[in-house]
Image (tube, rainbow, N blue to C red):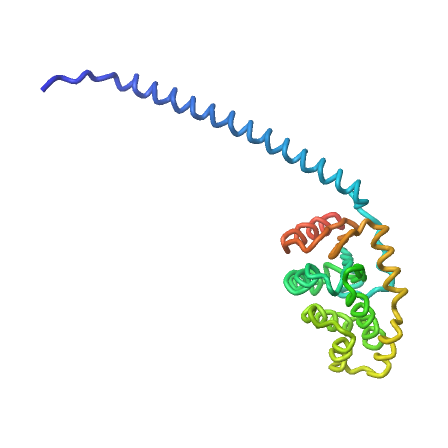
Length: 240
């Protein structure tokens, strides 16, 4: 057998150490470059967001949002106020109401951390949204805020059936004067109240539904629960 040449172990270890150091150095450089790239991308997206907000009139900072005399859910003295502008015919509002709002109710409203206020923002391409919002106000007139939110849930669970006949049918399950409710509905009694909500929303930068203000900070759209959670937690921390 031919005799193999053997390298000193110290030399082998030195070469391995140099290689590892090289790879480590390369990795650090790559991480630094990736960090620079991420920062650059973030600045670009921030600039885009600011540009879009400026062009659409959406706020880039906290807004002094009035709750008017609209229905409240939760503790009046809660440190965080969350105002929603909604449209009963809007599919995104419906998805939010069915999937996300119950988690906010359980974790923040029922625990006294958030006061929730709902204001109307019926869009022009949703002809049933106005009558539905008016009907909810007619329910509230007799049954207060708790009954309003019960009716609110029924409307969002039956978004495909919001005719005036159906609105009266849903109200029949509530302990109210049905004739008074029907008169309130048929006269569109709360049309001016809803217009005031809509005008206020416009002045705050609302351009679609649903739109939310958490202690004045806008969250637009039916975003995942985690986004609302983060915004509420931040508002709670700032309120301390």
